[in-house]
Length: 332
Image (cartoon, rainbow, N blue to C red):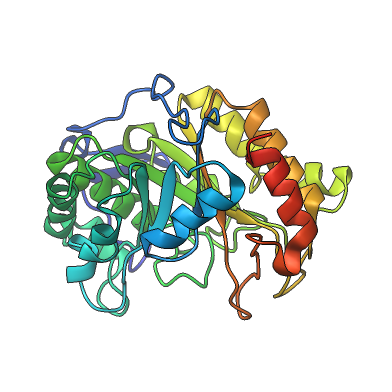
């Protein structure tokens, strides 16, 4: 066992991790029968957006594209201790009247107040049971929960280490704790596209917790690092171990649903693809071609100059991409 690596409820033998009995109490059967058609949008999958953590902009986006959104991707506050994570009244309360489903992005622990190693030991189980109960109490039991999203990027403080076992075991514990209080919650495991600085292998699947703990395998995919402006570039990225096509193949083979919690064109930041309707079209083609396994997708509508500048509503700096998005995702 590597120095500093703390594993709870698992044994390492011949390089294989055996999950202890406590973590086998709740499993996740194949979810291919889960109906993820867009009841509000009319699309073959749950389609949504992230704009802010308040309801009004989501309704406006649906009106703009002429299809209501099925899912609202939101983020909890992670710099104020466990309270806003285990009982996130904000933003959940603001969506009380939203008829769709919430996709809630959660860190594995509050910023500056924990570690994946402690999580792997079960130190935070009670916080996550409280979160599961919170969802039921707020009539959001069927929410999709993105645990420790983009763990394969060093920019996330909860990122996996070179040896991903602490993160992986932490994820399992969180999934079990949430389900113990709320069996209806859907658990989402999401990595960032393009590259994986961690784990050491460069392969995000080396941090996969196992089908028993995951309902949705997810990816956050932006048109940068590098951008895809032609078919060859798109296919090269999509087929890589960090790509959407590889994820879809895994989901189909393992009976999981696919989630694309964040995706969009990029008009600022490093190696940005700019106003690129080709990227919009390729994402749509991937969704429609694989509608049998696509659970949900959420366009990341961001105007921050220090982020990705992906805005498309009302045109703006990505006018051609906006027109293509409306043509494909709107009502024709």
